Image (tube, rainbow, N blue to C red; front, side):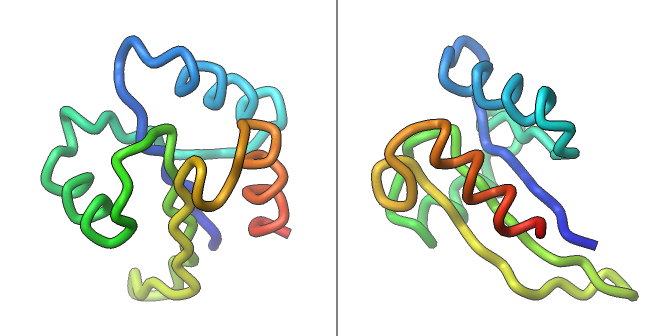
Length: 94
């Protein structure tokens, strides 16, 4: 099963817009507030060398909760705008 995790924060207009775009596209996702999931997000930042949000972790969860095919997407490095981010998420899911 492929999963979409979106790192966001309260008060971030781009984050709210991204979540709305995902919902409108009927894409299931797990939002992760970077303040609530600080330790997890800190690891994400270390791996990507970027603190920009909204950011994505795309992964496949197999039987036994084994993860594979992990992709990390951050603004400016992996996508220029929210429309491009949505296209990349859709491409990953297909």
